[in-house]
Amino acid sequence: SKEFNHHAELTVCIGGDGAFLQTMHEHNFPSMPIIGINTGHLGFFQEISPDKLDDFIFNYTQNMYRLQKLTTVKATVKTEDGATTEHIGHNEIVIRGSHSYSIHLNISIGDSFIERFSGDGILVATPSGSTAYNYAARGSIIDPSINVMQITPLAPINTNAYRSFTSSIICSKDSIVKIAPEYRFEDSILIVVDGVEYQFKQIVDISIFVSDLKVKLLRMSNYEFWSRVTEKFL
Ligand code: NAP
Ligand code: MN
Image 1: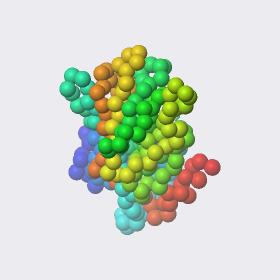
Image 2: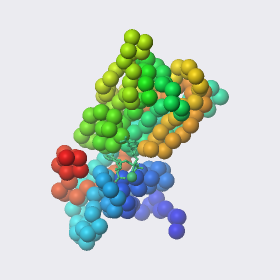
Image 3: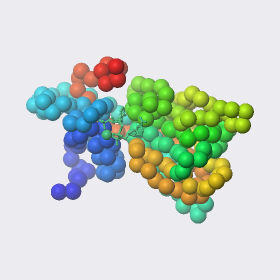
Image 4: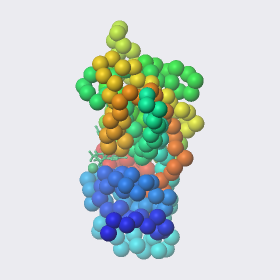
């Protein structure tokens, strides 16, 4: 029952946004289109309400839908033992300390040094993830048709001792964000990918960029991003 056919024409995901994210990760971001049936709470990605299933099947068989291509972000984590691991985020990738100390991160974009961040951590959000944790951290909501990534500080410290940007930064799809931790108390860092934690010791640096991997979400003809935002949030 756990078999997943990567040659099927459509993935149907039943649940809330959490189920959607879990499906993407469990099946390694399948390249086929995906549709969500919303039985969860918010359901930003979950297009179809269960009582509209018949309408959906009709529209699908009549090809009355659009494919929304969603940008993902990718992080490459290099550790002192020479190992490199890769993570793909659909909503966001968060870098934070694994304990409650403040964390210090040297952040560059391309060849430009941007800042030495101090605070809880930083969050790098995709446009379609901008309405999730990013928004709660006072980041901006970005129309998913714009191919960018957003760096949002988590509780940045701003004193005479430490200075960090207090607003989000929005980078082009060609930027490489490099994050080098500065260790004070311990060398343990959490990389949180769409809510799932990975703990690392002795990270040398982390590179984050817009990935080539796109998620193809099926949307019905009446789907409109900004009306969905107001409908879900206000
Ligand atoms: P969760 O704790 O249930 O998620 C919190 C809420 O975020 C849920 O209502 C979820 O919708 C909603 N959500 C997920 N993706 C969204 C998106 N792109 N736009 C708007 N809302 C979205 O955990 P989860 O369901 O596994 O989702 C993981 C996500 O939770 C993470 O990627 C992160 O963005 C978010 N999160 C938010 C905070 C915060 O806001 N302070 C803290 C940690 C994590 P459903 O109810 O439909 O599941
Ligand atoms: Mn959830």
